[in-house]
Image (cartoon, rainbow, N blue to C red; front, top):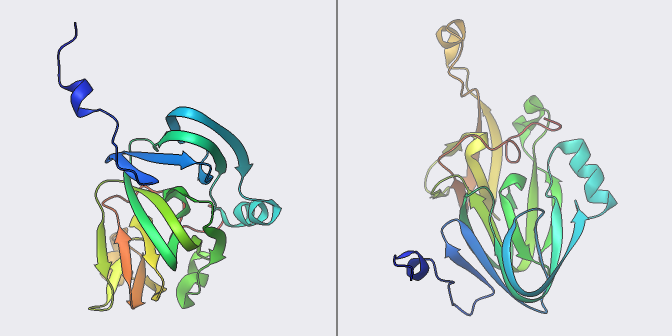
Amino acid sequence: MIHGDLFRSARETETGRPFALQNSKMLKVTLADQPILARTGSMVAYQGQIGFENIGSGGLGKMFKAAATGEGVPLMRCTGRGELFLADHASEVQVLYLENDMISVNGASVLAFSEGIAWDIHRIAAKGAVMTGGLFNVSLRGTGFVAVTTKGQPVALDVSGAPTFADPQAVVLWTAGVSMDVRVDTGGLRSLIRGGSGETFQLAFGGQGLVVVQPSENVPQGAGSQGGS
């Protein structure tokens, strides 16, 4: 006989929702003949009859964009009936529901989304982006569930209340209605002589909406990344 809290505290979550958190680092997707798209390699377990089809970067057009921009999401199509568990290197999982809405997401943060959500790689319209070689993100638009990952617990900042700035590698996503530009802050001549602050490029946000920022700067792609880096 085995004693301990593991089998009680880690039992499968029963919520009845298509997308639900099994825990803070694992997503449970209940499939009932409604396919979803998930990051390739993110499956950690499943129960039932579920099939996986690698769709790469979503077709030739998106594949060429991903190659040219360094942005993109390698995806697999998950079909069937059962419970699917997804994770990405024990990152925190955040679940959103879009209702005829749009978000702009760091491609490295996309974990899964409903098949009815349209996605594409888009160039961010920012006056200062030319100085960084171009900025690209993944847009998710429509109605359905979206799961993203963050390195640690994020903060959602309302940009309408005050000028808002963030490190490019810490930005996870922003909502429709948010405008973004690039700010170059050298810290002045004295800072340059001493080697700079390491915070030369910042993303400046305005408009109406929310920006989600994670407590980490080690995301290799996405918002603020240089094209082709």
